[in-house]
Length: 307
Image 1 (cartoon, helix red, strand yellow):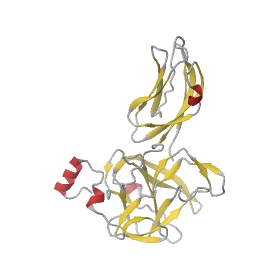
Image 2 (cartoon, one colour; image 1 turned 180 degrees about the vertical axis):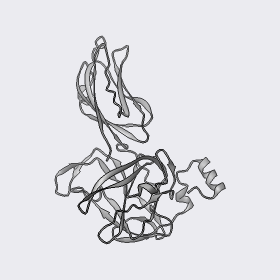
Image 3 (tube, rainbow, N blue to C red; image 1 turned 120 degrees about the horizontal axis):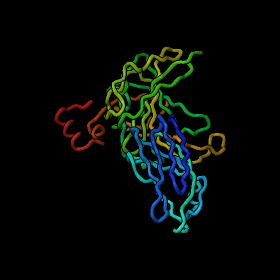
């Protein structure tokens, strides 16, 4: 889902080279210290959570070299910072090395806050039937989308507090034609992400970098319909992982994107969603204000409504 850009850098005794590109959003630079150690720093000029896949390809005069000759998955928690440092075996000699890195949107293996309760992504009192869709050879407990079908272009709302970090169009095949759908990606405080697929581009109520709250209006369903003229909307909460698990066919498969199966507040109570079951959308103040700052709570209390 996320665009990945690869850069190759080589550190020598007299110079440090970095790739610059018009589309480059994250840069890693290496800095030689007085004790001949090398520090790897990053700068990030893009919104939201990102992680770096770092691979040290070759190196000389590096302590614990075997520990570094693998891909590192490192979360970028700030706009800039230090990734790690290499120490020389012989402090009188410099380190020579080459490395590659790529970056992806999201956080790798974040510490999820399982106490968070979500709202269903529709207006209050809407009754929705939930269906599940899966990925080839990936077990449902690893990844699933929730889908809702509706005869009307329903209003789509946020499930949880977060920041809109990506609004993208992508092509899909539909009845022999190529059509485009819009997906909204929202970053959450614990490193998870929400995906809202099938929002009408012309109806968007949010833009990049907007702070949203549970129940905030995002837009309405787009015009894509199935054979029964039902509008189709899909949503998912996920994070990134680097684990290898057993697929449906029994073979090992590398999992990068893993779904969260959150608890939702509904008129039927606190629910883990199940396929082919109906739920009634319900809001409450406790869920709404769960992740608010004291200033946001004060604003909500005085205005009675932030949505």
